[in-house]
Length: 456
Image (cartoon, rainbow, N blue to C red):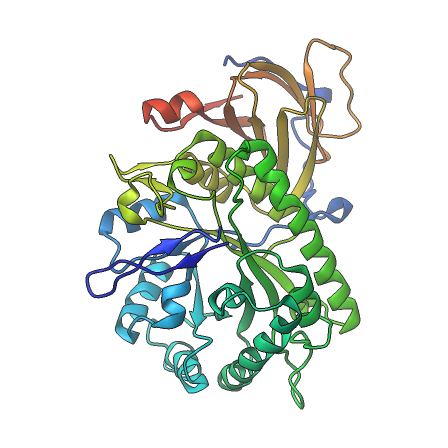
């Protein structure tokens, strides 16, 4: 859970957590790939084009922060949080941020206040989507931030009524200006079962149509998560912490879509508005980077629209308290969280394909986009592992000395290699070429970048 207040030149913001060596690649029948596009096979889950994202937080991020954020490849940037809910930035500040977000090729997600007059939310939709002050409309919006936490943690039985009271009037007035926008909410500080069950398909339902209209109050369930247990390995228990809530959220989305007969472009979606470790010391770790990789794996598998980490840069990147940055402040070096986001943002597209590993320490998953197959392999143990990767579930390897990895990509590729201990590799197979991106705990400790090689 997380309660946030921000620092800036004019505002005081304080945030508190609520919170190898290459081996041969075997090409059966001398064909590296089937020539047809396999991305539609086997009902593979499409990867949202704005999935990998982050949050802009403090007033006036430096040009270096914006440049590094662009280099990360993130596809969405949320403008939200506690302080913005209580005191929205000026229109000039919002225009500046939205302009910069759109200029780097990312999609802005703009939060409006749960406290201000609904007319202010209406004015923002008009400013960006009718007046087009930045040249492009904003598609994704949030209403409010962590309402249960910010309103004093009322009894969960009362939260649905509280949220419905502020959410519906704002949704009605915002969509009257632009019915095409997508509103996600209510951005609880964690997946609060009772409140979400009430708000999505329950007594205080915000997932149905606005009376007399062909569009809906809400278009997606959004929530946050910062695992608070300090005695966990984030690369293991941290990922499991998110997994439970993600599975529940996907089941809820499916049931509400069936209840309201929502499908296609009208289907209810879901997104992670904020996520990270519990605080600065945990954020600046190798484990947190692999947790980010595991979270994005789950988000792709269960069809999230976006997952926006908290945040670009905060508290000077000082590795303490409220430093939730994905850039380290000491030398402005990207952290493991940044690098894992970058590897997925730059290489994973098309459709998600699930992976299987015979070793529990190894996580493997992939994507298929036309003839390109991308695979991430994360070794969470501190020992190197030799493996054989098959890009087809039907292939089998008899060598018991190797760990067997399988990706459901319908390809005849079989690739053998070794991954270092505490390392993450991304492999991109395209026609007869293979590109590999290597990043390890050793790179992190030495503040050295990931290493990219190409071979065939």
